[in-house]
Length: 274
Image (cartoon, rainbow, N blue to C red):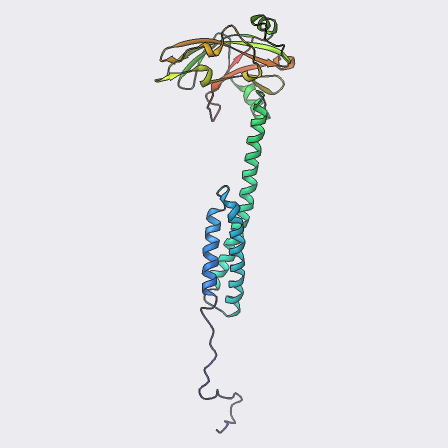
């Protein structure tokens, strides 16, 4: 075979195919990585499930890295798919970490609230203190609607009821601080039936930036809440609650009543305590 002197490039040997790029190289790997990455991203915010998704995200990342290397090296059409899988898998892993931190903070907050409320005492933050200070306060003897089912009147509040409560029952024990006695009158205005001692929550907001509930006091009273029968529409029940609070909490204190199950403070009504 004669060589053309006017060219410096040797023609290919007869029968030798021209070199071609593999346009589909790594396609299957890229698809697998993309599917796993998308599943990881969709599930990374689901509590408990995202524990498994964390591992799935790393598997997707491994496939995506391998697919990206192959597709870039061989100039495959699947390069964009593999890069997308790489990005999504990284985002899913970050999503798992962020969601775990978020859910952990919620769990800690709930646990702390339960721990604080177990003894009937809950700390009041600055925002709640400001709300208490600005809230409209009713005088003793005034009534107000609490939610959609009750009209409540705080009839009286005895801020130093220790002697009175100890005199009710010989088995009543001395308080850690001092007993506060609250007299309530409740009228059920709902359409079904209600038990005010279950449906209503009564708390004293002390001057020490803490809320005190009735679970602080286990003493027997003259008018026990449990003695109030189930009320139907128009039914009225009168009962007492006692609180065990430190002496310093009584200063500048307020009382509020709200539905036991309440997701906001709109249905909360405040009363003065003297």
